[in-house]
Amino acid sequence: MTVFIAPSDAGVQRLGITASKKAVGNAVARNRAKRLLREAFRLSRAELDELDRKFDWVLNARRNLLTVKLEKPLKEFREIVGRVKIFESKSKTGEENVESR
Image: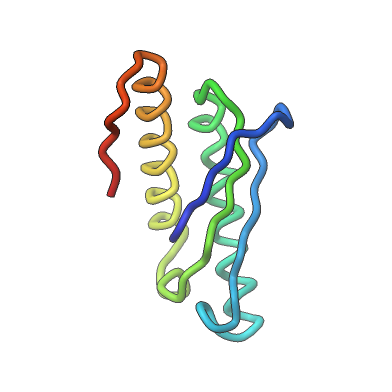
């Protein structure tokens, strides 16, 4: 999964999902991938509420989502939220170098 985030003034965490025919496959596959990503976002509400800022999240679905259950994208999304939380805390303390994968 690829994630893009941007600070938001909306007051809530917002989600956008892309699932292209080229990257994921037919309509059934794209809909399944989008459902998994929406559910991962929904189940991560507690982690998202711990963030100081609100963000607009865009998740790009990949074909490998079709072969896994919800646990894997949920774990991956929560790890990403954890990295954003670390980035936020380092930004507050003035550190500029943040390790990224």
